[in-house]
Length: 304
Image 1 (tube, helix red, strand yellow):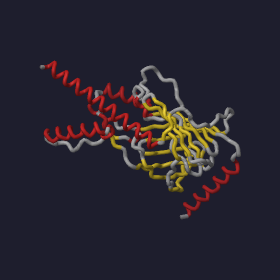
Image 2: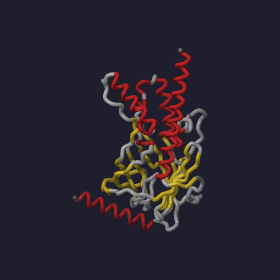
Image 3: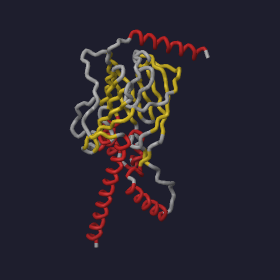
Image 4: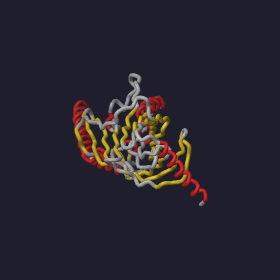
């Protein structure tokens, strides 16, 4: 009990120190590394040759490991990828496909409770504008040091968007040992289901646990990506298979930049954008399935 009281007292002291030493008009930049792990075996990795697996892992690394910059003031922030020049043939986003699921700059305003996301989907620009939704954080007393900052732990349960690629998994295909007829019947049913719903081969957990580490030494309720709402800048997030870690902070940089909402693109809500993705993926699946059917028939004719 004494330990908990001591840690809470320390939190109050740090909060007060940070608040009194904080400039009224300020801007800061926090640099983050984001890494998502994927089980390649779920996606056919066991059947790959070692060479092919190595090649795929190298391409995935470029897609799954990224660096971001969060530029913030007391009420606003913009979170965007720190893009670097890539080598030819590096396969960014698997030939551009991945960019349809990874967003552009994300603007958050904690005063107006607004979030605006720049998003490209197969060559078309969208502006996802919605209410800034918060998490119900449970504050802990556990601390750890991240760089020169003392951080406190907080946890929350987050509802996962069904198109959040970071939590996507491949659905199980049923128990092994089924006889061939049952297996064949199941494949027919599965193919029909996929044609109706392109996401039927993929599953996303409804909720995930989020562990965040924030520092009251920078007393703003901002953080990377979707995360905010704690009494201090969030320096680390662990959410499902993704870790976001702050590597550097620059307070009041010499060259300040305007924190502005993205402005280009068709304005939609997140729900409307998900509808657009679902419709487009269904169209693509039907086109692909139809082409396969025609090719199969032509192939059969040639064999006769």
